[in-house]
Image (cartoon, rainbow, N blue to C red; front, side, top):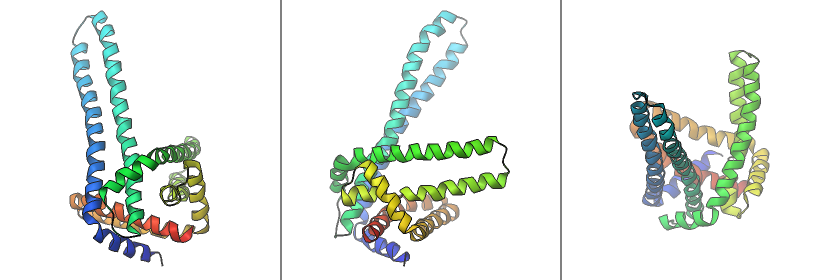
Length: 244
């Protein structure tokens, strides 16, 4: 049964609660700092822009454009770094999840696995993102043709159902030491043979996520981030190891 992976994930999580909480906290802090810097730069640009608009000196505004452009570029870099740091370190948390299948795990594992698999994880995430973009583009063509709302909703559901095929890419990277392209291909092949079980597993977590965030918003979000996400990773690792 699919629910076996959830119960086993919970048992593994309970034995490693503090390790996963600290790991998730580290990811939050590092990505949060990058995002804070990015938004801070954008906010400072906004204030500067308002001051420039109040001036009638066109030459001054032209000269000040270049520092503003540089600030926007730096802000974009930090924004991208925030996203990359999440993917990079999450490869490490998948490593922790894999380690729980053999016993205890520690935060040090996150950094060790991230150093070995983080770049591969980023490449895989970019590849999946490109696929997502291509599919979304095709669906957008349908939007442009003025399709009924029902068909648009159907297209969105179809997009989600397709993206499920890539849900085992990170487990494949961590568990089998595969490269980015091989991991994506392996994920597609494993999910193709076990699509219904994969769908039910992800749907169950999604329902729990929605219920928690809807009924107890703040506490629910914290539970989802610090408990359910690590549990999901453990479940996917267990699922992949059995079904591969």
